[in-house]
Every structure is written in C-alpha cells, then in structure tokens.
Image 1 (cartoon, rainbow, N blue to C red):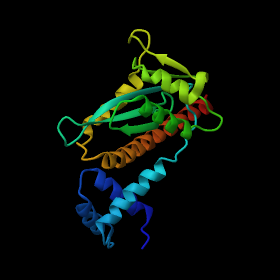
Image 2: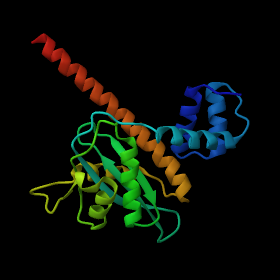
Image 3: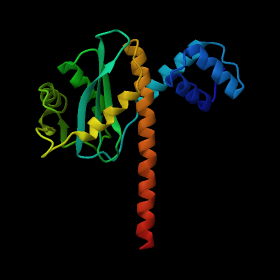
Image 4: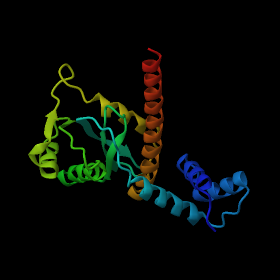
Length: 216
C-alpha cells in the first residue's frame, strides 16, 4: 500500500520528535485512520526522506559561505560525533553537511564535496570562511582548487563566523544519539525542516519588498 506524502512526512516528524518506531506507527495509524502494519515502514520512510532531501540544489547563494564543525553527544560516555556544516548568509540555509566519528581532513573534504554537489551549475563561491583549524585550508584547495579563497577569521573584531556558529546552537535540542546512522537520519530531517522554514521567511521578505517598491 502506498501512503500519501502527508502521512509519510508527519510520521517522520513524530519519530524525530522522540517517539519510538512502534509508538510512531500506532500514533500515525490513529491520527490518519489508516493501518500501518509494520514499524519497519516508518524506518524505511525516514531513510527515504533523508535520501530525497540530500539531492536538493540551492539557488541564490552568497559569494561568501561559512563553514564549521561541532561535537554531538551520544549515549556512550566519552563518545562524540562531529557535525560539519556550511551555511549561506543570504539564504540562511545549510547548503551542505556531513556527520563523522572523527575530525579529519578527509571529513572536511567530504563536507565540501557535498556542498559542491548541491551548487547550481552557474554558481561558484568566491570564499569560504572557517575557524583556524588547518585542515580546512587544504580541504578547500583540494576540492575547489585555488579558485575559492580560504577566509580564516582571526578575531571577532575584523571577521566573524557567527553565521554558522549561531546555527549550531540548535544542537541543544538534539537527543543523545545511539549510533551514527540514527543521527544521520535525524539531522537530515532536522536540516530539511530548518531550510524549509528559511525559504518561507525569504519568500515573505521578497514579497514585502516588492509590494513596497510597487507602492512607491
């Protein structure tokens, strides 16, 4: 049985709000008055949703992007995951992200390859701003060659990476993850919802701006 997108999306929302797969199945079945026979269907929807959102291409990106990484807690004491992300200061969207168990040059390169895959064919950033971690410079050079400048901020007086650092405050609402796979599904859904909200805000701003121009 093929379920409508509304049921699939809301079931994924319920699961990522902290419910177990079985409770999500029962809750969604009751809300939408349908029979979802297996909890594994919810898990499949989460994986499919994450796969679909990873193919998104972003338009209207700024010439300068912001990149950074942060630690995420897990259920295992002393074990962390690293969330890497790149944010556009104009669209306010996360244009690429990566999850890893270590903080390595290879992971930084995977982050930038993920971003590059999402760039429109007519777009190329002029610079990417990061903190002082040396791996970023080499990763930018190897993924984008010398066409993209590495803008390393040294102090908050001259430059700031607050654009991406403020985004990472969202991790305060994240649960402690049991494994990397569940973390990837959760974050893929969370970032998709985050970007969707930013798109609506940007659309409202453009409409208001156009109305103001026409009234003048």
